[in-house]
Length: 138
Image: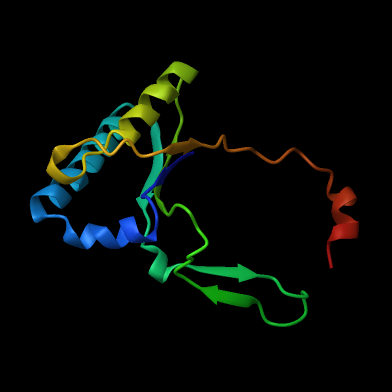
């Protein structure tokens, strides 16, 4: 999974000042990248995410009561997650190539943003004997 960061809260709010041309260029770049990865069979899923003002955190609390919900934006966050791609590639080299393309999204004036892209391998759950889960099930 490739995770894209859109800067901090201030940077996110700064998108409102981008010209229509700059916004269209960025969106076209992302759509073209998704189309390329879809055509190669490497794209499993991708999504852009809403800004931090619409995000919230949920914690389970004590387990018996309602969940604890904290609304955004989150001033303590240094960077805001902007979106993600789930890809299935043949090699580490291809993974780096795709991540580089994700990072190279154009910003104002067409200048490459050079966004940080975190790479998180997706793990699959190990096979588990259902009898061993009994202590964890209520």
